[in-house]
Length: 223
Image: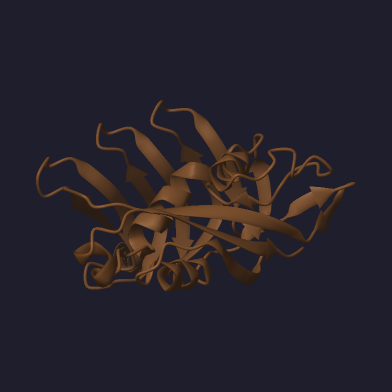
């Protein structure tokens, strides 16, 4: 009998320990539509440290991206989807490897907007790739780009074109404005470019290589 009680006690302690370390699932609801925007695991209900599952959704409820965090840092495999449920990229943040990386269209889109020959990357196997594709890029710009007050007050709208190099490790080097707009927009673009996360570097003849890249930032008044 004592042996049974002893074993039961061990099982209870083990179960209690597991229960205490179970993650807390945080759900973020849109204030207007009441739709689920994102959900993620925290260490506990009082924590702000993401640790475990993560998912973000489009306004119609379709999955936008899924992955996991380890102590607030992205880890493991993340998947990114367009608004038609199509997988557009899969990337392993732990190994730094692209697992599913289709032909990139963002780079050539920016070339057209910047007025640069779309054969600019013709000697490459692939241009530098923004991790997460258009899904992640839209989120990044939406979270970081700010319309300068003086530009907004003066009704300034239009595009700022910036170029920079993505080195063989995927990091940004020497950003330079090639088409200004004025009223503080260039400074804002350079600030955001310097915040850009690591890219998947360009590939040439089977090796990662340093490559020039263009981006276009649009400033417009949201009515």
